[in-house]
Amino acid sequence: MNTVAHDRHHDLVDHPRPRFAPWLMEPMLRNKSTYLKVALAAAMINIFGLITSLFTMTVYDRVVPNNAFTSLVALSIGLVIVVVFDFLLRILRAYFTDLAGADIDHDVGGRVFKRLVAIRLDQKKGSTGALTGMMRELETLRDFFASATMTALVDVPFIVVTLVFIAILGGAVVWVPLATIPVVIGAGWLTRPALDRLSAKSMSEGLSKQSVLVETVGALEMVKTSGAGRLLGRRWSRANVAHGASSTRQRLVSTIATTVAASANTLSYAGTVVAGVFLIADHKLTTGALVACSILSGRAVQPLATIAALLSRLSATRTAYKQINGMMETGSEEPGAGALRPAKFEGRIELKGVEFRYPGAAEKTLDGLNLVIPAGQRVALLGKVGSGKSTIARMILGLYPPQEGLVMIDGTDVRQFDPHAMRALIGTALQEPVLLSGSVRENIVLDREAVDDEEMLRVADLSGTHGFMGRIANGYDLQLTDRGEGLSGGQRQAISLARALAGKPQILIFDEPTSSMDQGSEAQLIARLEAELKGRTFVLITHRPALVKLVDRIVVIENGRVVQDGPRDAVLQELQRPRAAA
Ligand SMILES: Nc1ncnc2c1ncn2[C@@H]1O[C@H](COP(=O)(O)OP(=O)(O)OP(=O)(O)O)[C@@H](O)[C@H]1O
Image (cartoon, rainbow, N blue to C red; front, side, top):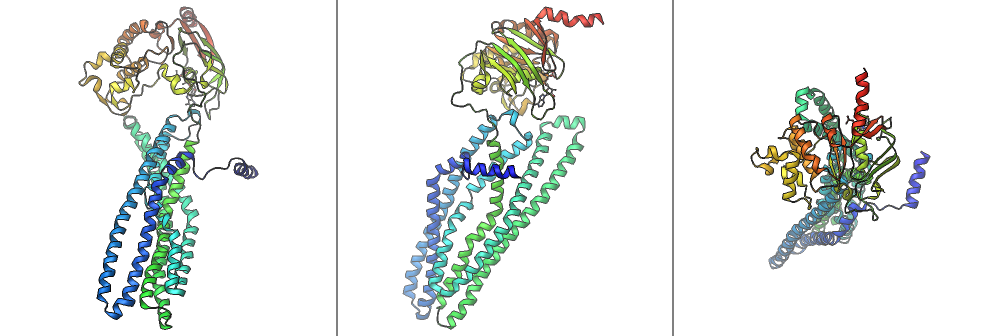
């Protein structure tokens, strides 16, 4: 408790934080001038409201008693002009609010997506579904900026102006709206903590729903074949029930606040009429002034009623903001100003005393691992399932930083490189070939300028992609659905190899590159890769004996350490010895 209090104090003293983080504040401030226009339009609309009440008063007090029809015509013309301007300003106000909202949404969406891609894997929290759901919360933020919320906020100061007007026209009747305003504010104030709590709860339960959904849709085939539908169905309905319950409570609380505001509005209007009758009897008020005051007292409470209706949205917006901000504050790979952006690598890789434990894992995956791969060497990492081979690849790619030790490329700690620039120089084919929606061409080229059509065709040929592409209608323009459905496992693997080989990177890291291929395709691939790999640093992770032909050196990993290391044939012989003896 003390620590929390101390931290909070520390935060306040040493790091005075703005109310909103820069990712939201900057786009908002950039739209300041648009919001000023919105405010101006809203102010004018409020003034027109006052003018309309004056019109009513004049008609009752001057026109009706005197049958002053000429004055009525003049007044009506004036009113029509006011109504036309009011109409135009309302449209402009809505347009400008949407304009600013769309701009902020575009900017914020771009920043958040960039951050999502750059999120540090060792600090990532939440499932894929929860992260997707959180991105959906951007809509909630957009609704706030492109909605009546901003307009309602501008209307608030006009409550005072309206009250002053009522006091001038109706004297003591102003006490009626003055008395109802605290009731509306009180209802809002009292329901807000519950609303905040409920919208946070409702959102987190919404994210659980999303998690189940994303997991199910992403693995529909497995769900069907292995009969996981029952388990997932139960999870879905549990999440659904919980979400439904909290949403219902959230709506109930917000309805209470809204209804109090609506009733206060009626009370304010009717109460003014009743109080006015006594003032008229005392000759302190004219009928016209009373009618004007009753209209105005309804108007005085109106912005608060709108705000009461918006309170639940405000709570949802705050919750969405907190969620997204949590992600924005998660460690990012975005490079600092001094990050190195090498144009090319020689290809020397060194892991020195590397110790690494995955977040939340009990055991170390890499335990004091030392490995030097000179530039241009071809190395296979062998070892049992779970020995840490893929983790070594992740270390080299800087996907996770080691807790102890150093991972270097060409003598430089990989953390000093701009990760994007560094990874662009390393051709990587991961254990699970993941393709994106779009054409096969797009999947190989990935918008990389250095990869032209000629290079695309070269690597497609090398990887074996060309062999089956020729037989498929549309060839390289074949549109894939997400994750490359519509192609076989081996075809997907070939395309992911083409992607890794494109641009002739000096370093290549292949993790089980042929696990889904038949022996014939594998043999052809090996023959073609022989020449391609010359002079390049090649790290191969595999369980397939045939692939080992491609390397000069074998390193055997066990429990996150190097247990054997040497020229290919010597290590192979040693590996076969115990089996021969047995
Ligand atoms: N993202 C992760 N989070 C937590 N633990 C992980 C993660 N990835 C791998 N591990 C753990 O690290 C250990 C080593 O995994 P790694 O993928 O490096 O093994 P591997 O040697 O490549 O195995 P395989 O031959 O099956 O591919 C495993 O015990 C695994 O449980």
